[in-house]
Image 1 (tube, helix red, strand yellow):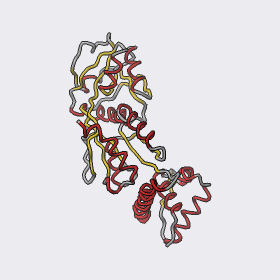
Image 2: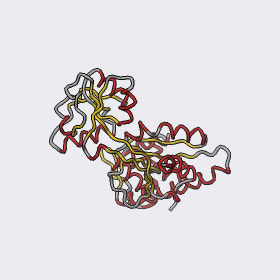
Image 3: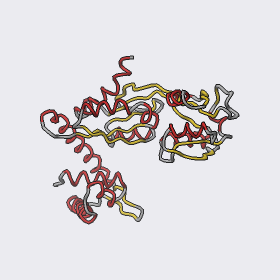
Image 4: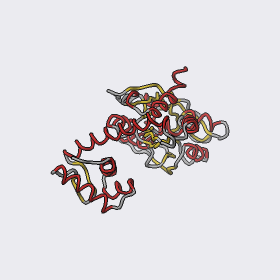
Length: 298
């Protein structure tokens, strides 16, 4: 059985994208060439690897087995490149990092920029996801490092503290809630909301919290950043849920009022999770230590 690294990488991309077309695009291959490679792999094994349907593809039982081993082999190759990077001129490494919305917008920009400046040979593939999705991705090897809310189970993963933050409600100074100091999320759902766009992990999280009690968020507008949310809240377009660090920063220049959310989930202990630091490439281990350093110093 002979599969080269290009075949294995292509197969992983096809399964992750759910499409041979999109998998080929990620590899910069022609669709016909990608299809031929997949068919040759199936011919070599003597069994189908993909269920091909009109809406896309998904792996067969044999395909899931190949996916697991392909991910392990590709991770091992990446670790080898990382461990040799200090001895090879121009050799680059990539870290696959997934983060929830809060950490991504409030806590990651500064440490990541400092790390990348100090490690010009390393690039970071950063993706925003829900915390439970991140844990699953780290566990199955789709991500090297995850930053998640501590509330999700992380059985079998190595964890390190990252940061602590809290979600708060922000309202305009002339809003009916402007005299309120503490409130439950459920008691805010009669008011119009300013939220993040539908792709945001936080927005999906809040929508799910509302749906669990039989309600829906009354979203007037959806934006791409917490800064923009605060600006429209100041204009009394609606209310918004943002990290306390964001609210504190913008309260210095905007006419907004911060209200403490009494829900347990509003307190956010953010955690770094990996399958095991010892299994990461050298540069990925250095990134973990860099991200965890401020919490270790507290």
